[in-house]
Length: 407
Image (cartoon, rainbow, N blue to C red; front, side, top):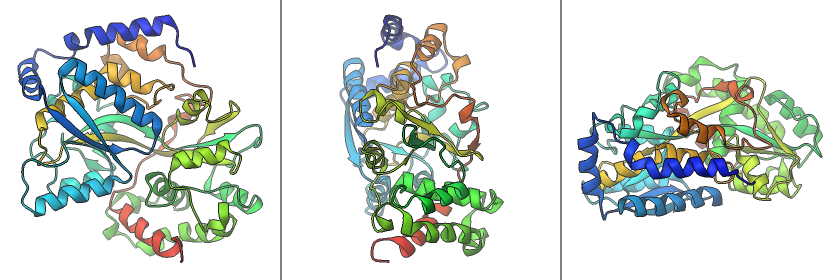
């Protein structure tokens, strides 16, 4: 997807002026100290590595950070964020209070809550002291300070927004199912044409939560600790739905795709009719890369779909916490956020507040092509809040015991 010259000019302006406009008078001294402490340091950034466009974006950030700050960013590619959390927990148990193996972690929801309550995060709040925090607005986007109903307490920095969307090829499917009940009927009438990533994959778990929220009538119990609820009674509609769907899923429910890039490929290959992603621009970006036909479009369910914010956190024993803060600040900058929002790069929606930006910065965002398959902001306005994070491990364990291979 070609970009116009004006977009290039604006991005050049933002890039060239980045160092000048990101430091505010109130915290310039502190941040200058952080820059000095970070110079020449290496930041081990543990982040999911299962999507080429995400990896490419992080590679761009690595080059920019090295050129601008003399900070080396090492992308430690994860298949499951929980494995990194377990490693930090093991280091704490072993008494490794400094010199930890992880400096910065892409995290949200269940994993953040687990880290927070286990004392695995930086002890003191640090996020609101970042110079680029001034470009955010927690009043208009409260999810940047509340992660899956868990207050962030200034211990993780917002990195991007996400919303569950469904993709379909309009050349093959004219009217996609827009509710859990319609989807159940579609699966029954079209055997082998639908599936979802295998839990505990994040998108797979998100799909389970979406269906549960719909079938439960947005049960208020989902937004309280699971220990306060009758888990079996609240989740019974979900298991009934899945029991009926399983025989008619792709490969008769005997196997599931590993993640959403695999699911996207199945859609592109015509093996399934509907794919799922947690990025409204994912299909547009895939079309731009030639991975999906340009007849693919996206939709959400009539009730809305799950929406959240993802974050960057610094473990309690990070080897280079100051350099990690510098990286988090850069990732929150207009320069990095506009690059990330570009559908030809990643297409991840920004966490920045447009009224807080300069005219040039706003123009850089508005000049971005939205993408042929990306829904409008109005269409994406129907959102569902994430359940309390304590529901995730219970749902995960219950699904595995019922449906994992061999069961």
